[in-house]
Image 1 (tube, rainbow over the protein chains, first blue to last red):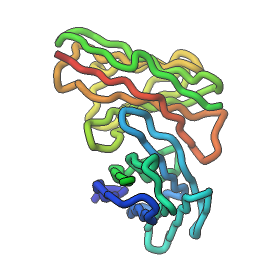
Image 2: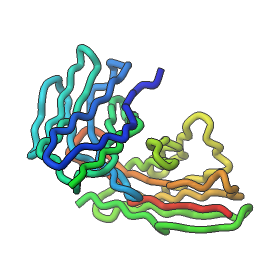
Image 3: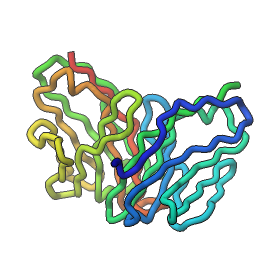
Image 4: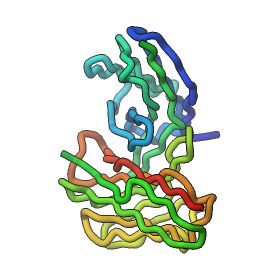
Amino acid sequence: QKEVEQDPGPLSVPEGAIVSLNCTYSNSAFQYFMWYRQYSRKGPELLMYTYSSGNKEDGRFTAQVDKSSKYISLFIRDSQPSDSATYLCAIAGGFKTIFGAGTRLFVKA
Amino acid sequence: GAVVSQHPSWVICKSGTSVKIECRSLDFQATTMFWYRQFPKQSLMLMATSNEGSKATYEQGVEKDKFLINHASLTLSTLTVTSAHPEDSSFYICSASGTSGRAYNEQFFGPGTRLTVL
C-alpha cells in the first residue's frame, strides 16, 4: 500500500465549477499536510499547508484535513482556466515528505 | 523570496556521457536539498537528500555511483548523471529547504531540468 494515495485523473471541469481534490494516507505519524501546484514542465509550488484537522482558507482555495480518517482535500471555488495544472498532495513529518501521484486538472473556458 | 534555480533547463546528450545539473538557492540558505526525477504524467520520485557538507542519503533503488550528488555550500548542490543511458531520460527537479519557509519542512522547487539521452 502506498503511503499516499491520490487519483491521477485527469479531471475536467467547466470554468466556475467547484473542484474537489483528495488524498488518503496511511501513516498517522505524518503531521503536516500540503498541496502543491505544478504547471506543465515547471517545478511544483506550495499552495496550502495545514497542521491540524479542520479547514484552512486562502482566497478561492480551501484545504481540509480529517486526521481520524486520514483524508485530505483541496477545494477550488470559481475555478479558472489558469487553475489547469497538476495538484500534488504531500504529507510530512520527521524531516520526510511524501508526495501523492498528482491529479491533473483541466478547467475549460 | 525563496527562489531556486536549476541549470541547464534542458540538455541532450549522447549515451555514455556524463551530465551535470546545478541547483542553486538564490536568496536563502538551503541546509537541505532534495533531488527528484519525474516521468511523464507521474509524481515526483525522491532520489536523494543532501545536507550541506555531508554525503547524500540515497533512496532505495537509486545507484549512488550513477547519480553523484554534491552539496558543497549552502546555496549549491549538483547532480551528475554518469554514463547516461536512454532510460535516464527524465525530468530532474531539485528542491531546497532551510532558513526560509512558511510551512514545516517547506521545500522550494527549482524549475526542473529535462534530460534526453540519445
